[in-house]
Structures are given as C-alpha cells and as structure tokens.
Amino acid sequence: MTEEKLFTMVGIRPESATPEKKVSRRKGFPWVSVVLMTAIVLCCLAAELLMTKDPGYLDLENFNVAPNGEFLFGTDTLGRDIFSGIWYGGRISITIGFFATVIATFIAVVYGSVSGIAPAWLDNLMMRFAEIFLSVPGLLLVLFLQAILGQANVLTLSIVIGVTGWASIAKIIRTEVRQIRSSEYVVASRCMGGRFFHVLGKHLAPNFVSCVMFMVVMNVRTAIVTESTLSFMGMGLPLEIISWGSMLSLAEKALLTDSWWIIIIPGTFLVTLLMCITNVGNYMRKAANRKGSNL
Amino acid sequence: MRRNPALYYGKKALVFLLSVFVLSVAVFYISRLAPGDPLMSYYGERTEKMSVEEKEAAREKLGLNDPIYIQYIRWVENAAKGEFGISFKYKQDVMEVIGSRIGFTLILGGIGFVLTFAGALLLGVLCAWHEDKWVDKILCKGGTLLSCIPEFWLSLALILIFAVTLRWLPSSGAYDIGYKDDWLNRVTHLILPLTIVVLQHLWYYAYMVRNKLLEETRADYVLLGKSKGLSKKDIMLKHCLRNVLPSYISMMAISVPHVVGGTYIVETVFSYPGIGALSYESARYHDYNLLMVLCMMTGVLVIFCNLIGGIINERIDPRIKANEVVQISEVTVD
Image (cartoon, rainbow over all chains, first blue to last red; front, side, top):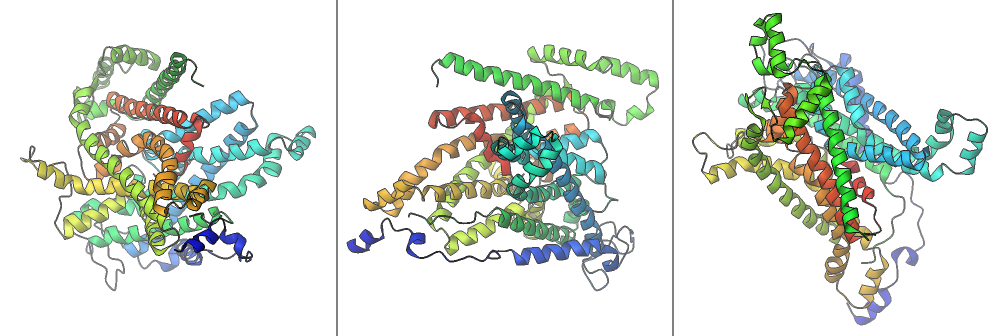
C-alpha cells in the first residue's frame, strides 16, 4: 500500500463514502429453514396420513431391519417402524418444546415485570436469585427435578423443562421494564387505576416483545434438546411414549448390533429441526445496521 | 472502591456462606420430600420381601423417620466433623466413593477446559481477522451447526464412526481391564469423551470472542493506531485482543462448573467412571447422602467461581458491577 493511499483511506468509513442503499426487509430471511421447519412440523401434525405402519406395534419378525422398501427407515431393536415413529414421535418432541417454552415465557414475563417494577431491594433480591438459578448447569437441574418426580409424561416433562428455563428471559424483560416503567404512559395508566396485568399486557409487553423473541425461539430449541437428552438417558419419556429422544434411547443396543439407522435417522431429523429453529432465531436477533470495521 | 480490603472480602465471604447455607437447605428438603423409597437403594430387591416392621426398623436405623429439619441438623453436625454418611447404594463412605472417581472427571474436565478456551480464543481471532470472508463464513456456519447437535447424539455418532465402524478407538470406560497403569491405554479411552467436551463448548466461546473483537475494531483507537501506521496484526493482537481478554478471563472463571462439572452426559454415554455419571445415578436411585454431597460440591463450585469471576472483573475494570458478569451465561447452549 502506498503512502498516499494510506493517507486517503484513514478516517473514511465505508458507510459515509457511499450513500446508504435501502436494504430490503426480506434480505437474509432464512427461507430454507422456514420451509424445512414448516414441512417437518406439518408432517408431524399429519402423522396419521403419512404413517405406513402402527408406530407402537412390536413386529417381532422384523426387528432391527435395515431401511428397505417396506420399512423406509428400517425398524428398531423392538421391531417398531422408524419411518412412522419419526412423524408420530416428532409430534411429541415438538409439543414438549412448545409447552415448555410457553411455561418458561409466562414465568419469565411475570417474574421479569414484577422485578422491573418492584422497589430496588426486591429487584436486587429477585435478580440475585435469577442469577444463582442461571449459574447452575441447566440440564443437571432438570435431571434432579425429573429424578425426584419419578416417571415422566409429556405434561410433567414440559413443566420441569419450563420451570428451569425462565431465568435468562426474565433478566432481559426486567431490564426493558426498568427502562420504560417511569414513562408517562405507564404512570398515567397506573394513576387511572390500571392493574398490574393490565399495565403489563397493554403497555409493557408490546415494548419488550421484540427483545425477547430471539430468546423465546432459542428456548424452544433448548427444550427439545433437553427432552431428547432426558429421554435418551432413560429419565424422560418411557419407551412406550414415542418421541425422538425415546427412539434414541435404544441407541446402546443399536451400537452393539451395528444398526446405524436407529441412531442416525431420528438424530438427523432432530438436528435439522434444531438448525432451522436456530436460523430463524438468529434472523430475529440480527442488528439492523452494523457499523463498518475501522480495520 | 476497596477502601477496606478486610470489609470487602468479608462481605464476599458472607455472601458465599449464606448462599451455601440456602443451597444446602434447598437440596436437603427437595431430595427428601420427593417420592421414591431410599430403602430401595440401600437394600435393593430385598426391600420388597421385608415386612412392615422390618422396614420400620430399617428406617429407624438409617434415621429416616425423624422430621426433616432434625435430619438436616444431624447432617450438618456430622458434616462439620467431616462425616458425610455412607452411600446407600455403594455401602461405602460417601467421600470414598467420590474420591475414587473424582480424578477421572478432573482429568476429563480439566483438559477439556484448557483445550476449549485455547481453541475458542484461536478460532475467535481467526474469524474476526477474516471478518465476512469465506473463512469466517464457513466457521460460523459450521459452529452454528455444531451448537445445534445435542451432546448425547454427537457422542453416539462418534462412537458409531470411530469405535464401531472403524474400530480405532474404544467406546467406553477409562481403561481396559488389566491396563490400569498403562497411560497410553488411558489416553485412547480419553480421546472420544474429550472431543465431545471440547466440541460442546467450543463454538459458544469462540463466537463470543469473535463478536467482542469485532466490536473492538469499530472503536476510534483503531483509527488512531492505523493513522500512526500500525499494522493490522499489531492493532488486532496488541490492542483489540488486549481489551477483550479481561472479560474472557472472568468468563473462564465462571465457566469452570459448566465445562468441568458439565460432563455428566458424556460420562454416562461413555460409561466413564467419573462423578458426573455418579451424580446422575445418585439422583436416580435416591442415594441421599451421595446426592447431597455431589450437589453441594457442584453448588459450591458454581457460587465460588461466580465470586471469583466477579472479583477478577471488578479488579480489571471497576466500572463493571459483579452482577453484570453473569449475563454472559445467558444464552448457554446446554
């Protein structure tokens, strides 16, 4: 680089040199992920139409069969058809992800708003508690809770995953609420006798929705991962309730018999769905205009 | 701000003790209120054949009949003397059970910790250096994919490839029977679990380093450095990275429990005899004494590391309040 060139370049930022182009709002929209995700979810919802076999039927003559014309994805060590199980089980995995997130978000919204509105000492106390909660490894907490509750079903599992996953969302909500709680419209609403939930729904929530959307989407992902991990370790859903996690809990037997399809196929669906969710979440987080680098 | 160091550290110590106390009470109550019969883990199958009177006597003997707070006080008294009771399942002193296994976890978690943070720093700098070039883009895509793969499934896939299909590496245990003192044998058993531990955390921290570095490169001092004729390397490594390092170090402190203590899935999948697999077992089989000590160990580690992270941060950058440090663990992938 010549001396002259260096001299002219320093201090000129790319965005000031060229007039800003209007960026389409759709730019960077994760089309592939959204389409794939919708497809998987729709297929799971329409599981009955797609299933070629009864997913719970133990076909003792055809167990551990590699993928072929009749059993598209093969059968597992108990003789259940994996192709049917994928759609049928996906429904449960997604349901748990959804419910757990709803529970977590609800707790987070209430907790975060209360903490944001509360006087300083209570706010401090509540945030300390949330921080302690956050710093305990999440899965360990779920493991213990579920171990204590005993045999899991879809409901208890959603609740356990939900009540352990609210803290990070609550912290963000609290920060947002703290910033807007003394704005005139909130004060006005409260002076006119607006109750907590009224203020929350009418004035606070619309302001923090955009900030927490990313976290909420990621929470779905975490919940699905947690469900599958728990079920895999034998502490989540039992074998009879088919989900992607409980299908994978047969993996150890599958390893002994070298049946890769039992592990790879449900896992691929799981990872694909998680990847799509992540892409959608990241799209929501993306900062609109990032400054150019000075380097 | 630290006009009186004694007061400052005294306050920290008080917070620490208080947290530990609350934690112990919580764990104690929750584990004991839970349904499930601890007699099962002590006597196993025999429990079903026992008469009501025998069960009652057994409960009395194990001290399970008293109100919970009395049990708790008794536990604290014994713990103060260094006696944590016996493990119901292993019929051994709790400390012995843990002592025989903790080394394995420390090796796995410790090496994993070092590799993770060294690798993450390297990757982060590499990405920031090539911002928006293909290297960065590929690494980011790959990293996102990696962070989407559940830990247990990655373990299974690696076992399937390297242990079952290729037969290069063993799939379970910490050493083969009869090879206890053969370190080469131990190393081969460590490779797969270690890979999982590192891969599981690597991208989260690398991405953080990348983003923080990119933020730094937008600061005005970079322009100054450039106009004085410093090279990109000098600015990036001597100035930007130096500004990122403090928060990275306090981050490392906070992450100790996540990385070192977060090996329970890996240990279970690989049947690795560490305390991760042990805590999972103890929760599952209601092994109270063992569960209690393991929970307390994790909890104390968490609280302690958070405190250290806070102190490091306040020392390096007094503007930061300790509680802001924890925010970085918000989007933890686990």
